[in-house]
Length: 296
Length: 309
Image (cartoon, rainbow over all chains, first blue to last red):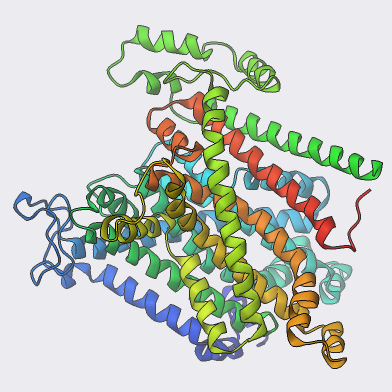
């Protein structure tokens, strides 16, 4: 791996995590490439939604209720006569946004907890780990569901609830890598030479913990999208009339007899997004650590 | 044997401590998070008097410490409170639904193991082959598709188009087929994936090479040596993954109108029945903890190197 750039710290961190060699391996990994292609298409479709469809995703038209796919409405219309393709294109914005921000909540809370836990060990570590155990005892979807039911529905609460349920994953992962890195001789040497905790953390511990966090974050995106869409499906996510894939699927469920397309297509969209992140995550893991290829 | 009993007792105490903390957490969450449960239960149109009556009824007018004392005392006696919706004991309603969720979870897990384990072993035995690739594709599908969507697709195919199986409810043995397969799909993928990587790990070991060298038939090597030794990590993962299965059960029960705890939970959330939500969360956590305890005990049976006591 390339040595860290002295100028920009963050750049050094990233370059260490993704050395040129890693990027090369990533480009040759068919699963990673497939993941990137799928995700790029979804992101572009979400961004350019207004240019890709002439329809407004929330405009109702009672004359066009539950139409089957046609040239006018490529995927048909839903129970309120709204164009399904438009709702899926615009809905992608929300789904990807929720997934990304929920993972961000998990990282922002979980990574510092993991660092503190692994670096200072002792009683702090014990308390943090017991709290993580407690969160895991709830199981992640049930924790998110309970939080949303108490906080109330809506975009922010869904992000917070799903995000909180991913904290233990990041805290555990970072703690484990910090514990390993601590014991490596050059880190011990730098401590022995009198380097302050902060310096040891920034120079040695964090850069080495970045790669596994990036892999976990990518794989977690799939999980947060599934969980958030699950809440939406139950009617506990983003509220109507906003287009969100899980909620579309949940509402379309009542019309599977008359028009199955209403629940089929949003599900395919969720599936593609989650698959994209799973493919990319697997590819990243293999590229970052060739020894782990094919395992989990 | 007394060593084992001692170990069992120790582990059971551990489970009880976990559940105690889960109970305290959900108790505090209901009372500390923004929102007045009494106001929410009463509804937007309720008068202040109605809200006050409900608050008294639920004991929410008492100081937090008193409430906690009563809650924990009741919990110790297996009493999870009174449903705000039906005024029936929460424990009684949950016990009426528990068998359905347990049945769904057990059948799904059995299907997942029966399908996932051989698939993973096959993929490992023929790593790089077309069969391996097919299993990988199946795994990717299983871990990426939303369980509620798969449920709806199966309903469209088997209930609406083919009319072979009932779409909803729990009337007769046929009713469980679609929910169980829906819920099993994710676990099939997960178990196949873990089995494959665990088997590949074992197949690289020296004793497998030795067994091959001394002429043990390929099938014997695979099933007697490799799978046996690959099993412990697989079993552990199955236990941990049971939490995901319970989460999936909540969604699956909703899709199929399966009268289990998951559907009761969703209904209770919508009717703001906080005592019921509280009780269900505790019972779900208890199920998860007990399954993981059972898995650890199973460990001894399948991995002779581990002995408790």
